[in-house]
Length: 313
Image (tube, rainbow, N blue to C red; front, side, top):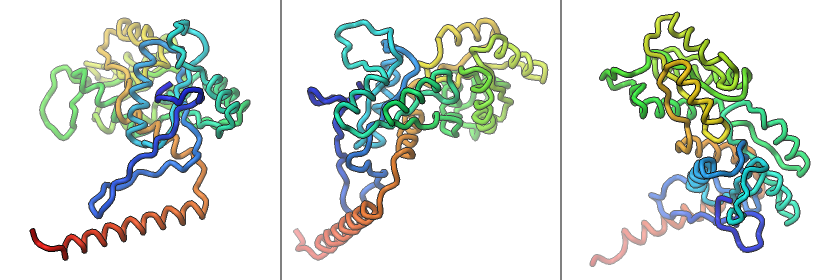
């Protein structure tokens, strides 16, 4: 579980965020309504050191984006037999615990950038408890940004296209690798178009879990003039077997960037996906929010006038 929980409580408690005051306060992020359902991040992997480190860091980003959201991590069943890891829960356990406690059905966000085999089971499970499952995280421009950064970290692309210096190892063609079969590869094509616009090189999607898919994409790039093709995983991490990534690089002889992991924009996408799934506020809630904003504005104006007319020290 990602946040500290009150003993006996099935999900972490909501911690209201502090609101800055005055004319020069930062723009406020959307408020989480009181009583809003928790965010359950559904991880298509069993609990373990690698998957746990990624999801905990991502939820740390979510909490920094939305301080008032209650969060929990739900894994696939099995794989965790350590007695001292009792905080690791499956999605089914979290939904059942919320129902038993009389809490609103959580909003389930799948930790995948596109179509994936575990989604069918996830939707069926959520339906049993009246929980909603959001869309997957991609395609999205923020994912294209994350892939671009991972390529630049590996020395396979310029970090900024506007900087006109050369990188000898920069790729002149990219295979955007994903998992989830041909459907996932097709969906990744949209992110590939966005990535190609950023890199100004051809980008072809391929499925790591479809035999021959990555090799065929690399061959196509070479046949159309690419001399230095590279692999760019459109993979967050837990949803893909690390051996698939290593095998693809070995069989094609192409360098590969790292998976997206806990890149900040992935956390931002989780937060925005959750917010989009929340029920629209009622007219009464909107009126209350407007009244609070007007009161804060009046308070800031009053304080500025008082400071301007106060005695000099």
